Length: 239
Figure 1 (cartoon, helix red, strand yellow):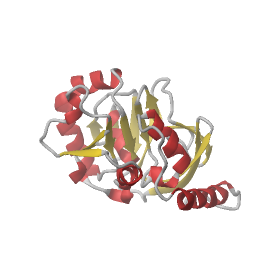
Figure 2 (cartoon, rainbow, N blue to C red):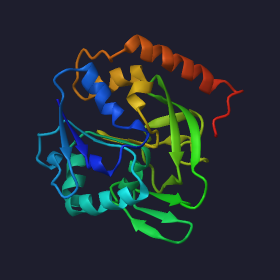
Figure 3 (tube, rainbow, N blue to C red):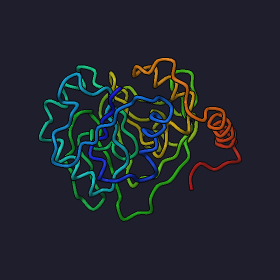
Figure 4 (cartoon, rainbow, N blue to C red):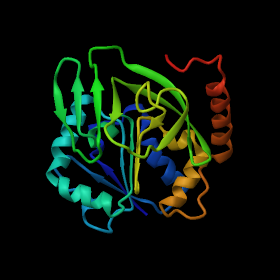
């Protein structure tokens, strides 16, 4: 199993890289490739990478990501169509849409892989929330912290369906993007650590058979506690 961390130097906000560390702790033999700014992504060489991972970035990091990956835009789109696996978390999902527009009027053209756009207010207070959703029959817990919200411009399959909290935007119950083997979500931080049963299903989907998450009993107990708290109507999900 080879996992490519795409432009990891752009940031590791919210502990996103713990997702990959958790897979490594759980499944010995995983090989990590780190592709830095200015380098050609390894996943473009067909068959060399099993999973591409990208986590939350700063707003400047988003621009650098777009500038570097747009060079390979046709190959990127082709790889997604052919089933290359991507896991994209936090505001990194925004760069795969059409554009980001700020309330100041500034517009950032994105990679235009999927037909959605993002509306952002960089001068406003960061929007923070808890989240409960569902993937297949598994409930998902997580956090969001963002300046923008995204809006589907056509019918796109979401990654999660929302039970409690905001979806892709505060009016939307769908959350994220799920197209073939591309998964993108605003949920940030160690998504896989927080959701050990989802991690088992996901690991099996990407080819890690007989996968048992590291520290499963502890992770499962923490998950159950969060799920109970987040679904309690007395618990506010905006903070």
